Length: 480
Ligand code: UDP
Figure 1: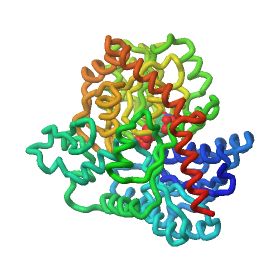
Figure 2 (figure 1 turned 90 degrees about the vertical axis):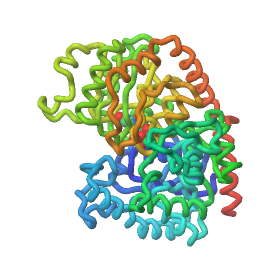
Figure 3 (figure 1 turned 180 degrees about the vertical axis):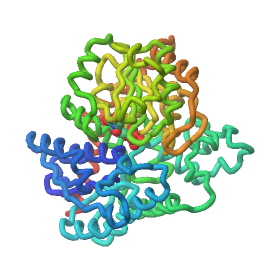
Figure 4 (figure 1 turned 90 degrees about the horizontal axis):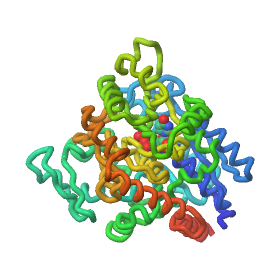
């Protein structure tokens, strides 16, 4: 099946988009589809080994490189991924990055002309790709990198604007027409929804929405059993053409595949696994806030103190690199010494899926980025939800209110990149609730059942497996 079609995958230049689309390309390739990932040299370097390993097992994935014009816009050489931008809070740097991204259009168009793929899965953050695709008669599928739930919530918010009818930013309202009576406050909504004035980002989102209307459909990294109501609502009530093919992370079956996703891990995997092997099942809490979140030292210290008093064993991923001892002012005095054997701090990049899948891990404090959320679901662990920005508050509601496999730490406000401050008592309470409380077991059982459903979904005959089949079939028919 699918052997005679060629598909392009063009992920946005950020780990949260690159990682799942590389997995997705592997998935299509494993079904005999000729696949090519289009990206820039630095981004390609993050998955060279993965592609090599696939090749050795007989699954070939091509890579087409486009030069990233960093120097042309005044960005440092090699600054080709959002997490490599020296400061994401620097408006000017971000604007330069966006400008460089726009400049990818021309080389991408040339590539399409040369290769003439039968279909392409392109990230929503490249809205211009639809017009380019339509010019060559190539169907474009949009990848948002989020859940059906958040796609539906975003659309309901845009259509009905309930946040414009409240008296204050903290007054709760129910999202109109969204199944499940989901409550929100204006404080928890992304800036792009609240802001009245147009800016570069809101213009891009508008262009993305318009492009989607002219696109062939949407591919979602999710599975039907996880959010059936919202998959149906998205397709039937909102009238979108969509296929779900996830959780895509489950295509990584070996230790090395789980280890080498995204950046190179800053901890030796043997050390990490040895540490986990020495712990009892469900006894370790894993804490990680994705590839972009950037806490203040005060917040990090607060987390450290909460971990200490909650007396749980933990692996905590902190994005701050260890430059010198003075830079460690975010840790309480003597913290690491006291936590020896009990807690492991990973500075930089952790092998997240490898850790989550270990039986010693029994809970996950997550920022609710969709990849992390779905990886947590696939591992069957209860979660403490701690959304920071983007669409993370939507994913939080799915976990806590719909799936009931997590506890909210209680973040009140959407704050770009740094997140809203959370006090240690709230952290301690939420952590204890998923690791030690009476409620924990029921949550864990539900989480385990969902993990089982996730695995079944991607096996032959499962919902995601079949949807992928249907999509490949449709593209084949379209292209012949
Ligand atoms: N990730 C990882 N190690 C880290 C941090 C993140 O492997 O130390 C991976 C994680 O498994 C997920 C992705 O990076 O696949 C982050 O995506 P997500 O949507 O959760 O968050 P974002 O980084 O986009 O905010």
